[in-house]
Length: 110
Image 1 (tube, one colour):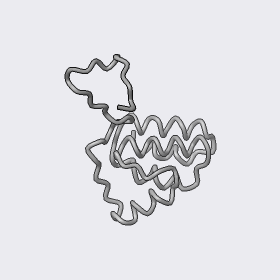
Image 2 (image 1 turned 90 degrees about the vertical axis):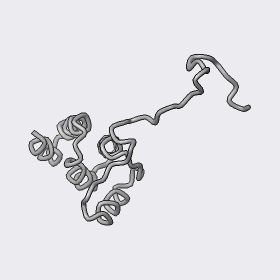
Image 3 (image 1 turned 180 degrees about the vertical axis):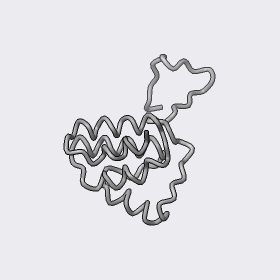
């Protein structure tokens, strides 16, 4: 299944590419990172954002929207993808003191 989804990253229809990226992101497979980064090099606009969200979610790394940063990272690691502890999360965890209600309003300037 992963190979079929990775093949769709080269489709001419941007909606097909976007759907493939979302599917790979949801599967959270490290093996999809190299094809995602390669396909990301030619992406623009909405697709670039989709690719970015995919590689950030799968790896946990945040190298920004510039595809060159992701390519440089892959080149540096020789294509060996090692995830961070944040792998699989699209949003950072918010840690609250145990006695603080997350819905309680509070002054952020103190």
